[in-house]
Length: 131
Image 1 (cartoon, helix red, strand yellow):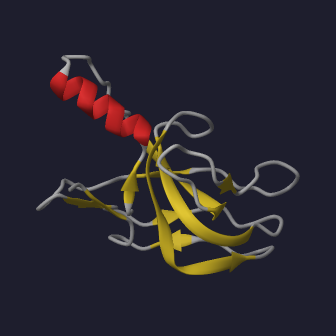
Image 2 (image 1 turned 90 degrees about the vertical axis):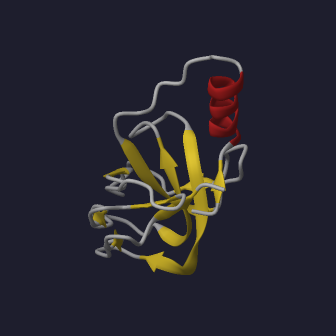
């Protein structure tokens, strides 16, 4: 992941500099985007409903080493029931359906997802670098 959302930037600054609590999510979820989000959010996430079968997928991140945390297990999205389009970016959220964007980044190689395709990330393929 290349960037942190403004939401998370503000939460960390408030927690460390203003003694305002931030409650870490118990589970984080990977989202797929056909148009990449920005630090302010936005972008176009793969639509749910209408036979799509798309849902954000839970991800387990490993303990950081030298400021980097990567997924410690494979991440597998449901098989596409409709054309999802070309996946350009991913995001990490604190909720499976709504919630807040935490981190986001573009894929090295965009992936066209058609009916019957499945998006998978092997262990270590999703990483977050804190600078």
